Length: 229
Image 1 (cartoon, helix red, strand yellow):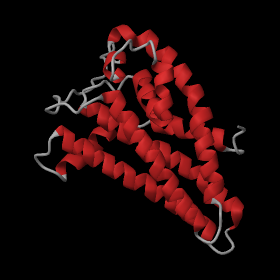
Image 2 (cartoon, helix red, strand yellow; image 1 turned 135 degrees about the horizontal axis):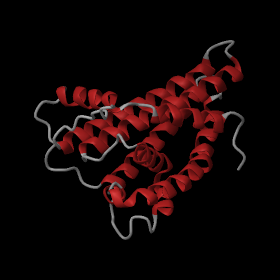
Image 3 (cartoon, one colour; image 1 turned 180 degrees about the vertical axis):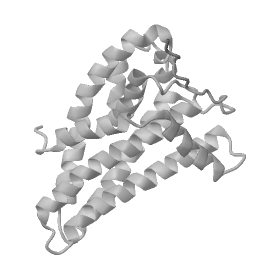
Image 4 (cartoon, one colour; image 1 turned 120 degrees about the vertical axis):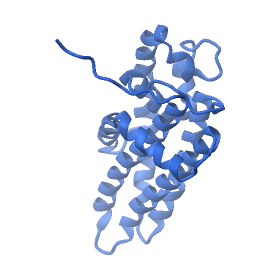
């Protein structure tokens, strides 16, 4: 299926922005979530992250679709708004995924691992096809592919996941992009419902990737720049 004009560029831009999110930003977000629920277990915090993520992307989809209901806005403006929504959706997904990875004590400072986690959750169920073999028979592959011995495998997996993102995710977002442009407020409903479906798929993919929450939070590891000279 041929993607609507601009969708592939929007996805490419969205992924670049999402992967540029620095670890301190993820940690600060995670700290805010934990502060709002003192004494919460890792499982409870992950459940809260899921609720926040779901609410955020539903709101993004509804707001983008609502642009078509504005008198005089026109379909072109709605499509432009929809392209911006793709960027927001991918960024929200990245923040959710990297926060969950932190709780599982996975090294999100590694660019290749960050890319793999985010791409796999965006692709959803089909991601296992790209990962098959690389993580052997392990049920929750994120832990396996985070090992230092798996670095070469990670690069290969990322290449396959990137191709899948542009075909699978691009097709889904392209269909929603057109649906959100429907006027009379219908587009807002299409955007909200469509993003709710995508959020459920992303959350399910993250659960498969990372596995059950740990019993306790990992110790906070501080990234330190190497000393030159």
